[in-house]
Length: 534
Ligand SMILES: Cc1cc2nc3c(=O)[nH]c(=O)nc-3n(C[C@H](O)[C@H](O)[C@H](O)COP(=O)(O)OP(=O)(O)OC[C@H]3O[C@@H](n4cnc5c(N)ncnc54)[C@H](O)[C@@H]3O)c2cc1C
Ligand SMILES: NC(=O)c1ccc[n+]([C@@H]2O[C@H](COP(=O)([O-])OP(=O)(O)OC[C@H]3O[C@@H](n4cnc5c(N)ncnc54)[C@H](OP(=O)(O)O)[C@@H]3O)[C@@H](O)[C@H]2O)c1
Image (cartoon, rainbow, N blue to C red; front, side, top):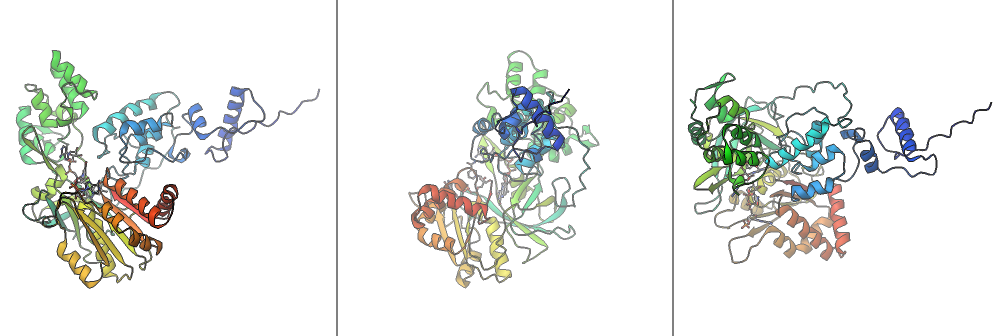
């Protein structure tokens, strides 16, 4: 009897699909069986592979290269999730994040999702800009990991080496607040501070472009009000600390997390219970959900007396906030400065305080220590060649890293030309670092300074309007190899500035819009267009 050799199973998998030879053989066999095919097949797309075998195409190193079209901080969560529909779980987890790659969680968006998926990271509430929406969505997606075949194969991973002190949110160093001065003049509608720290004793080193992570402390007045609303003694012991200490620097008091509403639902009845339950699942029964910080939640359901320990358990940990560094270590390696806009706004006749910005603006006293860490920049650095011209676009606090860049280029005698776009509300009140910038302009170190004041006249003038006005020169600088940097508001400004740049390239580079957009994309790819937005 002769045995006809079995024809080799054709490959259904794309050549670059990240499987071992055994996995590849097994999968090809499986697909051949599934489709009853043995020849003339087209390899499956990465998406199809992911769909058919969700457990296999899922780890960060086996991730499909789908371009992450949802990776846009200005895109609403619902639209991001729509774009990620049908994608492998880590990609959908990534889409749930705020897409700022801001590093506040200790990762970028892609790596945070990969770590959650691999069950190396259990904290689902680390995305500061994504807030409750992101945490809620991640919780839902996390449940999918319990489905058979969804979780990645358990592998042995060596424990990560302990991070060097001062370079990770999990291992902060202590820096001393030296001084702060207000950058707006009396009469401004903004409150922005130049904050300076002494790094002596911390051994912290940084580079221009890096950010500084800060662990804030809650406002003591707010802590008092929360304790009063709880009706518990402030020295109630919780894990070796008092309730007051824990409320001061251990937990976030804004906004009220779902878990708190869940706890409240156990302690109330009837209609109130239904409302608390609805709030715990992201519904908004009274139309006030967005205004409910922890205190407002306790007041809304007045009369409940949660056990202090259960109450603390229901709150989110207090997260660090990051700030672009606005000084160069070449000027003074032992100092670091920030440019911080104090967030204060009123809701129902109570002033709400941005926890970290107002901590830096008013609660921490000079001479006191603050827990900090250096967040290394990813793709936000001066060109390696000091001869290259740079164009910096930084309205508002977006000026911070550019003050550092200018200092650095001055200290190192970098011959490249420097052009700064700065803008804010009113020229008489909000011209940050006016003396320094004018001195640099006078000396020629700042080759060009373009200003855009949005509230000086009847018409709003923004940096992108100035860019269009000066499009011809801007194009000439770009043609001479300029590197372009944008820093500040991610939601609107950064998008509008990019649009303006595309228009400038189209008009002065004589291209159609599509080619101009491609040109700007190429600048990005070559690290000649870098952004640090929040
Ligand atoms: C890479 C990076 C660099 C940054 N650099 C800087 C910098 O140089 N300077 C700077 O000032 N900031 C910077 N930020 C922003 C900074 O990290 C904080 O997000 C900011 O200071 C607010 O934090 P907070 O703790 O004071 O406020 P939070 O306690 O986090 O409160 C802010 C929240 O309050 C709410 N809120 C704010 N205003 C209003 C309003 N008017 N009405 C209703 N709700 C409102 C919003 O939900 C907002 O998310 C940077 C962020 C990133 C990611
Ligand atoms: N969530 C938001 O909507 C939002 C928006 C901006 C800033 N922020 C946050 O506010 C904090 C501090 O902001 P900041 O002090 O840096 O100042 P800012 O509020 O960003 O304002 C700086 C300047 O930018 C102008 N501006 C507003 N919209 C713009 C746009 N689309 N394009 C270009 N310029 C624009 C402002 O003008 P006018 O104010 O006169 O319009 C102002 O002159 C940051 O934490 C930032 O993330 C939030």
